[in-house]
Image 1 (cartoon, rainbow, N blue to C red):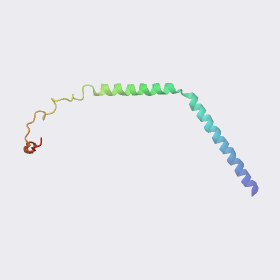
Image 2: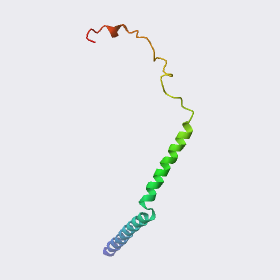
Image 3: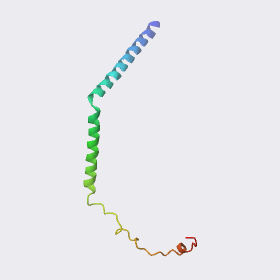
Image 4: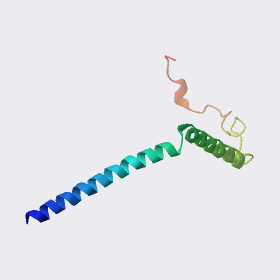
Length: 88
């Protein structure tokens, strides 16, 4: 029974060492694979591309927002209670 426990402990230690070495190796591999400057440049170019696609897709489709669209710009004041406050 004692040999089974020692075998399980030895296998557990070996597996733990392999996992730790794999994590360290993966960290250094990913760290050296892509420099930080190219990642920021890639993100900025993706943002610029999305903005240009959005601008070209909405060009001429959306109406201009102004006073000509609002039909109630020159509406008459028909509220009788708006002139009843003597302190205004």
